[in-house]
Image (cartoon, rainbow, N blue to C red):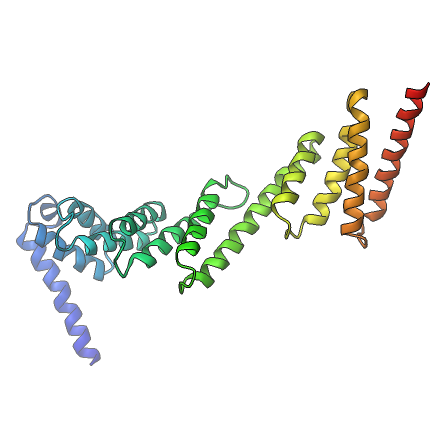
Length: 274
């Protein structure tokens, strides 16, 4: 059986060589009007793992076979070849295009999943811009809404968790960098958004503490007519922190911030009476 399979593979390779030789080579075939010959060669190249050559032929065939025989196979294997060549951006587009053009195909669900998965693979490190990550999350969530019982849902959830962790790390770092560079208003607002968006984040305790401290530092550096309102917000933030993390190692430091904010408020009220 092994010898027979090996013989078939040799025959297949020879067939490709003969076909291309008859046409004067790959380039001549690519530029010819022998569309059936191109299709057969493209499929042989695909099956022989020569995806870069298959890509050129499938791309060349796309317009000619639109709405005709082989159109679905050409669109599918074009996307598959791009995926196997690790051109994930173009592959995602072609999978998405396949799903639109062939909504009733048995391959449509897989194409929609792979379109989103390609975006996930192309998602950059958390330290870089996360636009592609957000696009991947949005597409995966749309997929889950359309195919809630899909076999791809477990893998999809794993990918979503991974990308969400990346966004959490990115947004926390942005907020902390504002704090570190003493841009306390920007830090306060960034930590506030972080806490609203990521209620499950492991960094939540740290974020609440730095928000509290940034709020206090921003308040005491504010114009006098703004200080009372902002200091009162510090007291409110302390109550949230102490009730959420009663056993925090930062509780003592947070209480110190609270005491200073309370003293500053008392001082403002005394000055107003005088």
